[in-house]
Length: 303
Ligand code: DON
Image 1: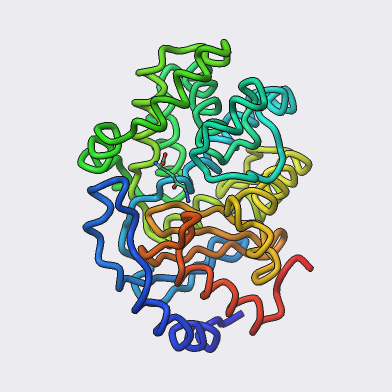
Image 2: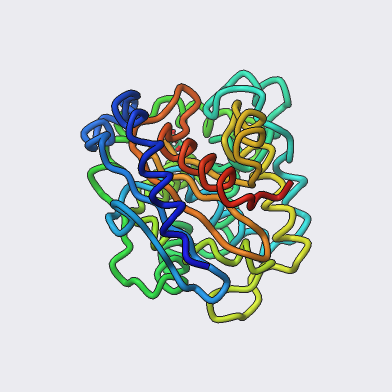
């Protein structure tokens, strides 16, 4: 399918949105990104990619990384993983301490920061190098050896990451981490600092559209595990606005405060959008608009 016609619709629709919004400023190095960037890409099941705008420019993937660490841990641990983290909507901001305390240290889902810290901790235990394992996986899936950490962004987040440190200490207090707090935080901020383009993201995440098969067509996840990731993305991938997102777009998705967002049409394709200005929930304003336009004009959604 040729998507150029829908790319033209998207480009028209996001123009007014690009004028508003703000980049994430609680990670100071991220605030310096030009909010006028916009990229969009689609990969089909054969890894054929089409894109528009800044679709080949790398950016900080932030929480989009949480989908990949989740997949790597699920591949090793299977359903046991769901005893460590929940599968419920966030019901609160992604970095909320309150929910973690109320649940006695079981995060709502693997995409809130507390849940992602547990997944990174588990990946560290399984591999001895959580962020390095993730980087290697992404390089292999995309055939792009340039995918790497952005040390400046990781350091900026570490220096200002009091909330994540508080979450990690709380998790440690509940006995939920195997590794030292500093090790977990270090790997977590590095995984968030990975820079990838929309092109890279659609290739790396295409196992979610292929029901668990990697780019090489070897199996990463079984069909039911891939379904479970997509299901949790639908209910929690865009945090406290997942209902509105499902209403507008109708696809499982995962956002990051770097302005990236990926969405899955199982059995068909993967989409990625990037627009650095985000809403108060941490989702790209232009990215959500673009995905809304895509599903509305093509009629392709899971509903
Ligand atoms: O931990 C943080 O706050 C960031 N490194 C990632 C948060 C994020 O991307 C939330 N997503 N929309």
